[in-house]
Length: 564
Picture 1: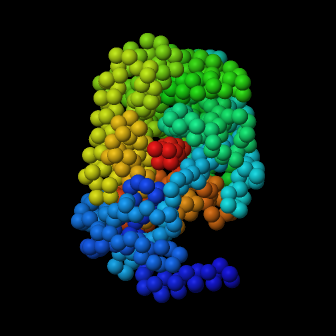
Picture 2 (picture 1 turned 90 degrees about the vertical axis):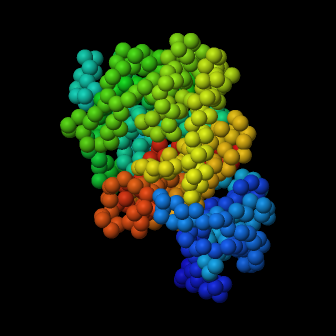
Picture 3 (picture 1 turned 90 degrees about the horizontal axis):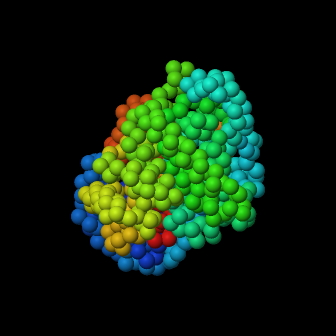
């Protein structure tokens, strides 16, 4: 009854104010820092001015001019920019254009994004396999997301595709821990690559920030930053994914996806499936990063640094001997394929991390700068190596100019996309997982700002961030639990079957996509434009699934916008 009265009161207040709330006015629904760029977008209104109003008393506190309209073909809209960067009052506000108003947003001097940063990292705790989640760690804002242990993975079968003389088909091995990959319960080494890199890179870039950021996970308070405690959970699983010959299994998976049930209800047998050059190289890169990062915590994690480097070198040698083993699902396996038949980028990334960690010239000589350096995704990882080399530029020698030339070219290409986008977002193709691409693009721009200090890079980084938190054609803040309008019906087995109305917090959805899949039916989407084709529904695995390779770059970007 009280909740119904509150909704009625809010409706009356909106009517009295004479404004309707609309997705036509798009703001960062979490908010903006007091000092810095603050922009919103207005779609198809053709108006001249906008107002910023105080959400508490509806007083007009700022009036500004809208930009000239710019048509954006990716959303088929005429977009105007509302720039209120010079408005520097703290508080909660909304924007009015004509007879419409935006969602509320906060303006705050500092640490306005700490909660988002923390939640994006805690999402990985909720993704943990082989453990129960206890209420004291799993509860969030009064909602209990605890659950029983699922997938102990202490009895995993060697699949025929991964069999060797020493481990024939049917051999039982143990490989507990790790993170579930996405909305399913399988674990994939290749998709762990960009995910592990993003969190490890975040720590290397801002170690003091992450030392101060508690995630309230079981390991909190053990003298190790919680972002590393979470990485250690994944690292323990990764160690078990290496075969005795140095090769690395591509995935730990059942033969098919289970139904929409909780982890402890899934009793399908699980297998080590396939070995590939890509999985070995991604493994080598991750282990190299782990070696140098965990070397500082030898007392808490003895021998982890040494063991990780040894594992990385064994995987590298296996890949050098087996440079063209490409994974493809066996005929009896119907889980994620992660097909990749070009591993030149994996060789570059692995060599980069091995060189940074060891300083050994053989790895520096392996770097091939003739390959492409696109925005990183799970299967295009060369730029992960580039990012790490830029961050550790003091270790570069004669290759420094070449590294920075390739990196600046990538960053400036993103600036070009940003400047030519009606929604000021550095993307031109909305493939599956567009929010992951935008997160990675924003992170690259943040590195460029740190390196070169030019405002254009920071503005483009912040615009990418604003897009993800509400400044987009769908009107959604894409992160669960934040903003006014956020995804509540992820394509995720836990969120679907846990009986809780609220989604698990801190997850970013895949986002709009222009791919052909219409998984909710021909008329299942409110818009079919590339930037508008999104639906908050369980059926929409193409736009509304969650995945570690999208959440980790988003978490990295969150750390950047909070600290740069």
